[in-house]
Length: 387
Ligand SMILES: Cc1cc2nc3c(=O)[nH]c(=O)nc-3n(C[C@H](O)[C@H](O)[C@H](O)COP(=O)(O)OP(=O)(O)OC[C@H]3O[C@@H](n4cnc5c(N)ncnc54)[C@H](O)[C@@H]3O)c2cc1C
Image (cartoon, rainbow, N blue to C red; front, side, top):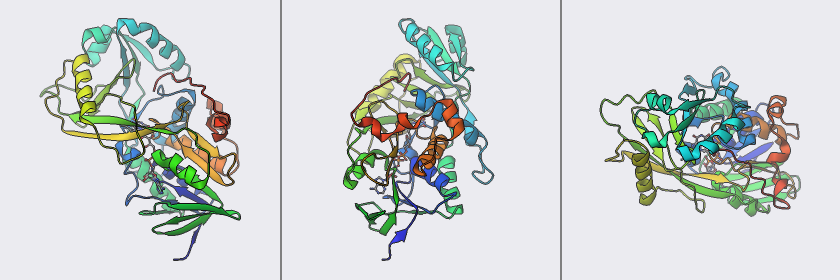
């Protein structure tokens, strides 16, 4: 089989690989290789589909805000339907969590001035099923939204193809080597070569990087469980915001006439086709029933997905300091969808050897914060506020 040549070869067609490929294809030949028979099978197809500008650390919040305009006003032909729809996010705290919630509020309102504090009466007026003792105080982010993940992901992939790029499925990168100025990658679907190899392999990003000879960055996939259940008849849930507790031990939100809930678990696990564990489903039900008057007699649907983080919970985006032409695009954690536009633009700029786009730099996104070089020597620098 002849070798397929590109300017950029991207491993992984989840939201990270798709958004970077879309941006790079505006000026270059881009090929994405994907192990599964369809893109989106892993983390991208398993999210809770929320866009929240108060979630995650400062870099995540900047990348999320930097994605807002694109997601609200995508270019013509990107999607037939709106990518974002009003939802709101409400963080609730007990009386003993007041101080923590006030700290989050003070930090977040710098970037998101529309957030507001709610008292118990205002919280219960919005979501009457919350038990009063769980809601002494609340922080409402009115402009948080539901994201149509499928539409965003497909929009990037369709745009990539329109720009002349390609996605090759059933093409797991099994072997990779740098020969001269090119990376050559062997897959069951043939050989691929490019001067720049972008590692967007999600939970497998570090596995693939070490196969290529890169030093590990400490990427840790963590399992998160989601359940869907039917609310009691007659309960008007459609306008509820997403509700999260101050310590993020659960959240729930309406999902097309049903309720989506998670125990916000973060169980470390090796990369795999992860499935929900009964114990996490039971913990989820217990927490929802403990914090609300809802009961969950039956789980209609359940799934689990992997959220992959490095120690400081900031993505790893940039050329490996020791491996020519090897570009990391990993560690999107629990934010890969809401940051996807800004992350794609940032990755494309850095992979072309350019500066971070000016609007994102103005929001505080820096190449240094994202760089894989920050792990040598290892640094912690955790500053996470929420998420
Ligand atoms: C339960 C849950 C809730 C979440 N909620 C939200 C949310 O509300 N908002 C938000 O923004 N984010 C959320 N996330 C996070 C978001 O889903 C992830 O950050 C994002 O999907 C990561 O995208 P990715 O492209 O890096 O990974 P993936 O989608 O996993 O894509 C990586 C791809 O690489 C492929 N691959 C791996 N190895 C190879 C190889 N050797 N060769 C070829 N292909 C390979 C895999 O098959 C996979 O398709 C949530 C995640 C979970 C699990």
